Image 1 (tube, rainbow, N blue to C red):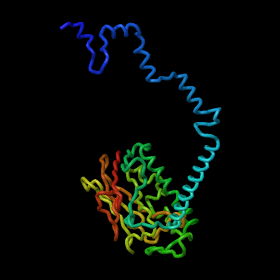
Image 2 (cartoon, rainbow, N blue to C red):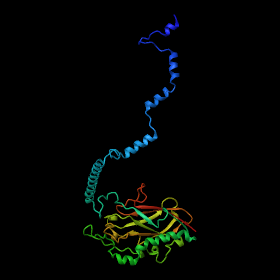
Image 3 (cartoon, one colour):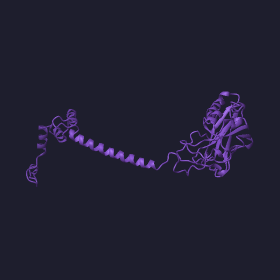
Image 4 (cartoon, rainbow, N blue to C red):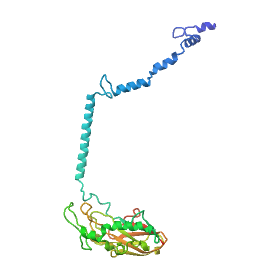
Length: 322
């Protein structure tokens, strides 16, 4: 078979098949053809073209449009959103107003989760560790200053001016509407005796016999003890019980008198001052970390819940150095 004849044989699709030599000649004749075709297909634009289009989009002087909208179109859409959000805000304010009508500013609606009282101590500076050296006043002076600041509201003159004398041993129940201002019973600083800071301005810290104040959290309408005063006791939580040899309680035998309850809230019980129990640690082991637990005892008091160390009890540490 003649090779030249096979090269020029017509194809099945009709017409003659171009030879490799002719294809090569076409490429040589127009070398930039392949480079120009992709550019034409992609339709690429320069940065100047993009900037010009963006400028026209922001403001088209021919059609007088901004961002593709005329002034009338912008006015209509802004008016729509103004009316829409005004109605939305009005609905929200109305729902909030209706909800507030169901609430009282004087008495919480739900009080079932705060019936057992929690307790707190003073002074409270840097956690629940009270550590100082008797021979170094700068270590215990911050505790003394904190005590004086806290007891300023309990000064005898302040209590006599603002509050009244009540009958001990019974609840001070006051009638009237919820918005009527309630009277408060006097709790004078002098009731704390050796822990009042009157005779001993250092509250025993200069002698290594610190005073610590205990108070119950305020709960509106709560009557602790179910008619019997709630008392306080303290002991070593863990370790040698002989490290805590003596504690004196004031006032009396360390009880919260019933006349200071119930509490009616800060809006109506304006001059109310929480009753206190002072614990005077007169004989504590020196140079040891002594963990102490003080508990409330009375009817309805929960003081053994491991998951809450402040419910009916308080745990703190004394570290008294020489």
